[in-house]
Amino acid sequence: MADYLTAGEGGQYAVREACELLTGLNGNFDQVIRQRTHYSVEYKNYITQRRLVKTRFFTVKENVVEAVDLDPIN
Image (cartoon, rainbow, N blue to C red; front, side, top):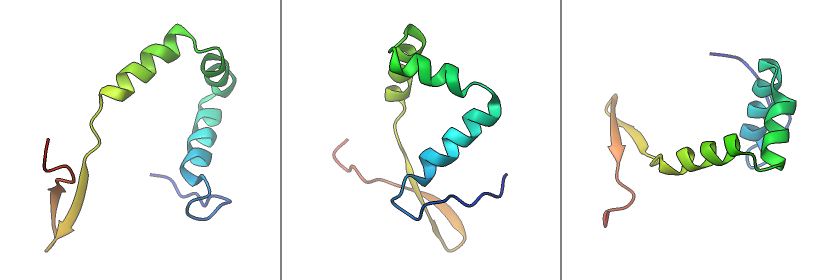
């Protein structure tokens, strides 16, 4: 857990700001940007794997976390 207030409000790329901060603190910001801009093999592998992940949504009802099905067809 970390306490951090982003410079922007909601809808102003707060998640991106936090991710870029953490990447920088991890010491590999330049490497990540270089691989992304050159569409390297590593980045291609990353993006392929990321696209395989199905986003799931949850809610809390009566203090119980429940999955929410937003796509009843699939």
